[in-house]
Length: 197
Ligand SMILES: CC(C)(COP(=O)(O)OP(=O)(O)OC[C@H]1O[C@@H](n2cnc3c(N)ncnc32)[C@H](O)[C@@H]1OP(=O)(O)O)[C@@H](O)C(=O)NCCC(=O)NCCS
Image (tube, rainbow, N blue to C red; front, side, top):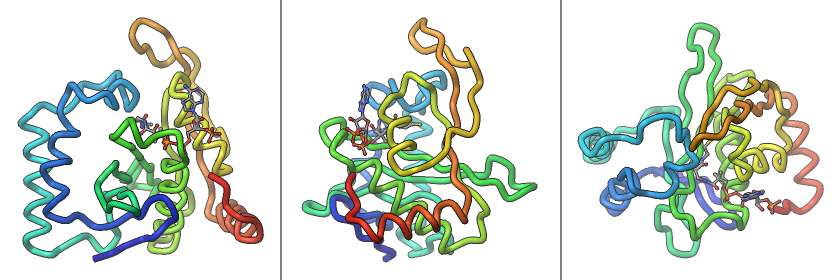
């Protein structure tokens, strides 16, 4: 099992105990859907079951992709799933990846776990791949996500004005990103100070 240990959270591969919790977090009534791409429909119960079924199949076979696509964010004290990190190709043609993060459990947010998890994820992805850059996309009303991007030193690289509508209000769409060299510099700098999420 791959485990990337942090102070508040660890990123780790899936265990059987995660599956029912994850299925429940995917349900449309869960609050995080209000923040994570609220302009997209949440997964249907069938799509949620299919996603969990695919994870169960990988778990049973003990076969995870060499470069992990989605990992569990687990609380270091309880080891319970509190969220996930992921990545997908924004453009595979030019090897341009995009990261995703969700702290499903609202009671766990706002104490630095999102920033720590995205830092661990970026460390892992830059070490395990030849990615030249990483980014994430969000809407400007998602203050927590924008704050995470700024806090870990990523650059606001794109702003599409008035591109998103959330609950009747218009927001900019924003992309925060980091290059490999920039991340190396940021991590060098942070290791010479104590990380403060
Ligand atoms: C976005 C998310 C991953 C951030 O994780 P987190 O654990 O809350 O992040 P952190 O605690 O590391 O940082 C959040 C920061 O946002 C700030 N913040 C939170 N809500 C805020 C708000 N409404 N206005 C302004 N700042 C806010 C916090 O104060 C904190 O900053 P600080 O450490 O300087 O005080 C998490 O909130 C989440 O999963 N939300 C729901 C799903 C989602 O939005 N996913 C991202 C999709 S792009």
